[in-house]
Amino acid sequence: MTPPLFSYAIRHGDDRLVLGHRLSEWCGHGPILEEDIAMANIALDLLGQATMFLKLAGRVEGQGRDEDALAYWRDEREFRNLELVELPRGDFGFTMVRQLLFSAFAYHHLEALARSSHLELAGIAAKAHKESRYHLRHAAEWVQRLGDGTAESHERTQKALDQLWPWTGELFFQDDADRALAAEGVAPDLESLRAPWEGMMKEQLARATLAIPAAPMRMTGGRIGRHTEHLGHMLAEMQIVARSHPGAKW
Amino acid sequence: MVGGPAEWRWSGAADGPDVAVSGSRGKDALLVLEEVKDPEVPVLSVVELGIVRGVEADADRVAVTITPTYSGCPAMKTIEDDVRGALGRAGFESIEIRTVYSPAWTTDWIPEPAREKLRAYGIAPPGAAAAGEPVPLGRTVRAVKCPYCISPDTALQSEFGSTACKSLYVCRSCKLPFEHFKSF
Image 1 (cartoon, rainbow over the protein chains, first blue to last red):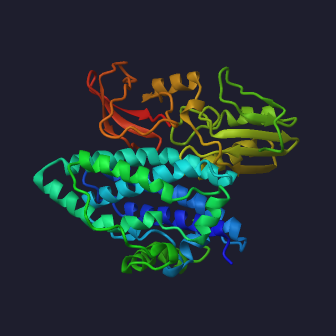
Image 2 (cartoon, one colour; image 1 turned 60 degrees about the vertical axis):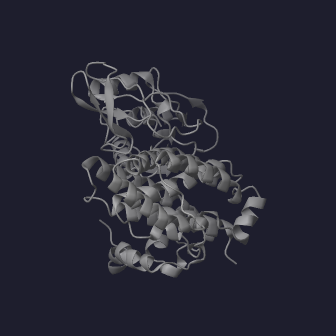
Image 3 (spheres, chains in turn yellow, blue; image 1 turned 90 degrees about the vertical axis):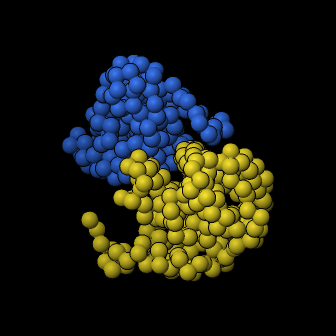
């Protein structure tokens, strides 16, 4: 049986690996230089966080896989990230709305996880939580500026929110592994994060003059390895160099 | 922890960050590390920045515990290599470097004399870290003084600068752009 902690560390590590990669696709394509740099910086933070989670996962598993083996040598069905983070990056508005939805979740999740009875997990969460504060503030500022901006920026940002909102249901997905960890005080009950997350989203989206879609938050699948058609393409690009030159050093 | 509880805490700088130092050559090794500069902020040593958390050294054997500033800091490998090189040149043959994530690095560990060095170098030093407070969303005004003319009339250009630990500002008085070491 897969150890619950392996499953947990893989899920939250994969979120960051995949979202970090999506953000890094903006490198050289940002709308302005400062944002190009900001997105690359946030991508690096996420990659660093992914490294910490995947390293822990590899050790818990005890099969000799390190963070690189887990990032480059697993196939699509073995990834456990949210489908929200694997969707193509879209336009800048789409990227910023997704950053807001995810960063607000990460902010609440990591804050709670920093109180974990598992000291290493708590340490990783405390470190990542500090970074999530900057990510959240950055995204919230942009969503406000775009939503409450010109007619076109408003329309495009609202459209991005309409497309992304249904995928947010998966943020709170839990199975037996999560419940086992929550019972031991290793991880927070994700359901307890729903109200603070929704409260924050209501406030921020209202400030940005955006309407929360009526569509229910229902998409799930990523947490059990069922992904959209987009992840495989992304992984092909992300993994090609490592797989073409196994063990290469530079 | 580096080989159990440290015998004593010491830093060569008058007002340096706490480093757990132990072993008969612990102090020697720390003095060596105080000469290793951060590759991105070459005006500060890795000790002054609070990256070095512990040093344990006896005879020709040394173990150094370091912590990253930001979890994705791309300079960590260079820092490791620089630490290894400096200790090797100082006669240590067995060099072990351990990375820890907890307690999380904070700019509060940067001592006042090091902040003065940052300012002289043209980087506005960090204010107190506010990790425990709720994150302020929406427009926030933070008082960051220009490191060149000390004017408080400055404007944030970007939350993210040339490295994760810095943001970009411009001074409205002397018109110069400058970097601010983010409170973290």
